Image (cartoon, rainbow, N blue to C red; front, side, top):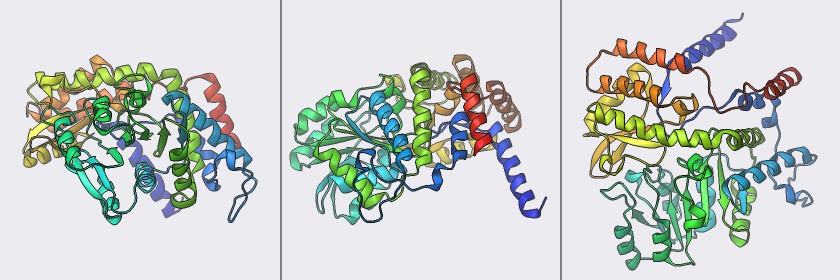
Length: 425
């Protein structure tokens, strides 16, 4: 083996060990199935396809020809997205969460417009403000209150003083549902409400958490790899067909997305097929696991935010470390045993760790395993056991969980499809 290939092999082996020993408690990560990963071998990433299927007859400058088979991938993925999320229209061509948000900003705002968005330190997407600044948008921050929910009183006061055409609910720090009906009542029927469901999409798709369209949202934007287990991309869902949807489609194809990464669209289709079969059970356990782990930690002496409100109703909860120094210390402790988390700024000028249970739920963890994980975490954060002992306990827990669940991977039909792909591409 050449030195270059040997180096590649060594990295692959190292990454395999890392995956086997790591426990991701990150709200923005999940695990994809073997069937989904195998689909990448087909080489769909080698071709360009930027159009919507219904635009096949519109041939213009730099149109890509002979791609009807790729249109089928786009169409069947759009159909399953609209079915699962009860949307009248959607676009699945976005490359990432930032790609989707950029499309929406350029679709919904003009220079110097007023933009209501979530405060960056309360979970607002960190890239929205820099883009908005380039358009000279007048930003009004929406906040989380001391009860860890959207601060409706603060919003209403600000709205009375300054109004806008669009409300951007873009937070990634979401423990409880937004008061969408109340927001809609305050702003009236003509204002567009964009709801970012990236962290709650699996719960929403399963009929849990809340129903954004029924409660007042016009647009749902969501990544597909957080509480959902799809590829790293995003989707835009529209409550209705019409001018707004047409504007978004135009902004995708003609302005901001030159190639739509067909391998990820097909992977999303596979992920959503899995979700139709297993998603309800997964989402119910996702909800239970978040509350169970938060409760276990609190009972073992680890302070959890929003304990007076039941901790959470989403896929995440927050460890309250109080100071930034303590949050950094705890973050590094968790890294040493192989646990990945995020450090965040909490309402009330405190710092903490955001804990998401997406990945461990897809590994099949339920109450027994979650309590074991809670004991490892609490023993680490309270200093009851040493790092090496806890690292071994974590590796044993990860090994016992095994491979991912809620997938077709063990179905004979899926194995036949995977073998066909491996042998023919």
